[in-house]
Amino acid sequence: MDKDRIAGSAKELKGAIKQAAGKAVGDAKLEADGKADKIEGKVQNDIGGLKDTEANSRTEIDHVGRPHPHHRLSHLLTWRL
Image 1 (spheres, rainbow, N blue to C red):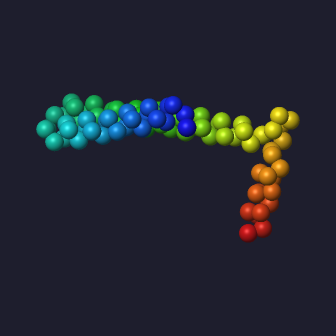
Image 2: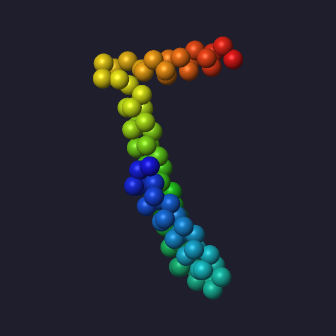
Image 3: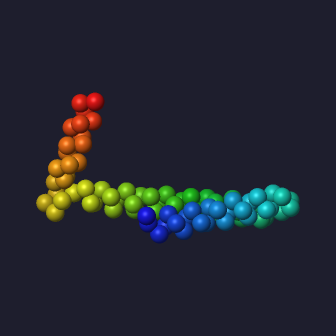
């Protein structure tokens, strides 16, 4: 798991808490700040997800640039189902 995913999730949670607190006390600025933090955290989390996907796809390719044999086998099995 990429560190951006962890930081992004934490920022989303912080934003949700700020947004709820702002809504509860009627503070529009605090509510807007919370919403902005949630969006920023979501973007950071998504970037971390892309990094994870890239890292996982690199491990599926061997040093010659061919897919590992077990990956080819799993693709064949899904075609037959």
